[in-house]
Image 1 (cartoon, rainbow over the protein chains, first blue to last red):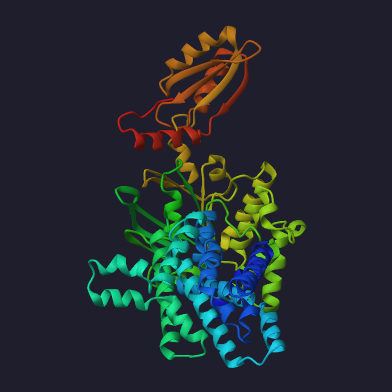
Image 2 (spheres, rainbow over the protein chains, first blue to last red):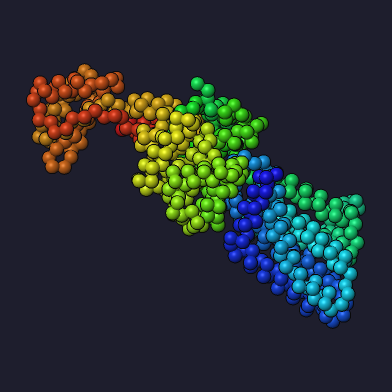
Length: 244
Length: 323
């Protein structure tokens, strides 16, 4: 536990030792603003809620989370620090979880910095703050899901650009898995059960129900188990990639 | 004496490539093993298996009695490891890097602060503690890696090319440091600098194509040299032909090599027939004939020659080069 914490701390400080953190946060805040006010028509809707803010998070994360996760393991592999890290007296799980939690905490900070929107909407009207809290929770869980995917893919390659592109495509797939674009690909040949399973993986569906204020245990379980499965795959990816 | 490092019949295959092919080593406390071999011979792969970074295809490694495969954490606690190229997180400073390693190693409080202070002083990192590692010179980066490896005062030290990229003074310092630590630890250093073996190692092992070809003391390694116990004389070139042929007639001498030097001098080397001492025989001959000799000394045996003979022999069987 304390070793996971040491890894977490090192990793988390690492974000702020380079311009990565600041660039990411500025771009994230800029884009959330852009989507909320221009595309989401925050003012024009005349409703005191953050629906136009949360609605675009799956798309924003699909682009930005791979930019955070791409370096998680591919950089360690490329620079040789993977060997240093994994010959220290820690387990692989501690290393994977520590690094993942640091990346997640970092996105949580970026997300928390959107609080002026929450202040604004409370100033302008009387929003249902429990719905907004649910939205933030759902958004954070979804970010964790994307991060776990990106972390695993980053462990498969030494090349950060490759990690970014593949993570982007996989995240895109998870966003769209409830849409015809993805489902048609499966429905031609796969049994209906598979098609239903694929469509149930849609981040959009699970996120939408949470951000409407309906905190369904199934949605929470979906995201947490998805994180667990991808982090486990992450461990296998590191194990198989060592020494090459 | 107990063996702190026990490597039994280690094999590693990557697909069809056999990187390590049956390496066994036993290293007790107090021993410094110089691990020699050409690039790509399997030195680093062996070290990666000893430290538990990669799993062997077959064979086992025990560190202070803990199996690296089944009791990995206990084994890793006992090891200090400098991986190939001394990797470190570039955005960290040596201070924060050592602090992190100390945390992971379970050092805390005053003990942690003392250890860091001691190691920083020992390795001369004081001047660069708050500079980011990526901006440091190659020599300093290597020293940061070394500091990390010895921070918890481990019983087993595995150092992959610890002096690579250091200048001669730094090399000397690092060797002195290794020697100083040697009595209480079992140490493996890999190197392709042969003088290093002479300077710090109590044992040498040569590996090529994944196989252990030689294991013994540096002295035994030198004794394998054709030039071991050979005697070299420097004489005026005008006398060289006569002296050379006379020496060649001695029963103890296998053959004579002569190389012309500057200023009208020739260097004659008489090789010992059975590797035994021939210095007294040569000296007697010199005195008998009254040859004017400018220099007369015993060759210690050339490690690089032995190294070439052993490793080239493994690469191209049947084509062992004679020098």
